[in-house]
Image (cartoon, rainbow, N blue to C red):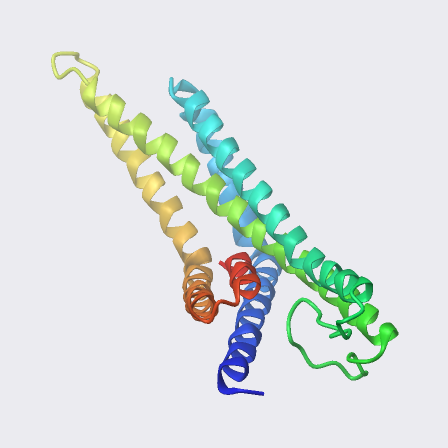
Length: 238
């Protein structure tokens, strides 16, 4: 194996490891932080019932959030299908081509306690194992991203409503002082919710940024060595 191929294998394995770490971390956060997450969502729901329904831009933020989650779902479904279909297509091509030998190339280079190269059973077992692991990782990553998106949209909605209410506050109204006190309390509650959200997701943001950086470097290396298939797979981890 030449130097470029060896570095490419390390890059590919590093990307897979980062993806696995990210999925495992999201699973751990969802299980470990379940009570704070439920409390946070309950607080957002209660605040929306009190204040959010009065915001005239509620429909706009709902459509914006739905569109973003729809794009995210489509992207991950397409990338996951590509990631899992490529080894099958390569195997079919090598089988139909008499000049080619079977490479038994699975999605990502990983170690298994059984023989993969030269064994159809080992290849199928490894291939199915990576399908389930990638689907599980993507599921937890998607849940975490949807939670972050819901929290972000809710905060944007509330802060936008707060700004509009402050702009429309009339100092000549004898009730303006009470309204201002209510808006200050509203602002204080929003800051508390934002702080709780950051406390729950900060470490996840850090790991996501780290794994995305590794994936970008891996993609850049594979593109520079004209290994386009592997480079496209690295986009899947980002």
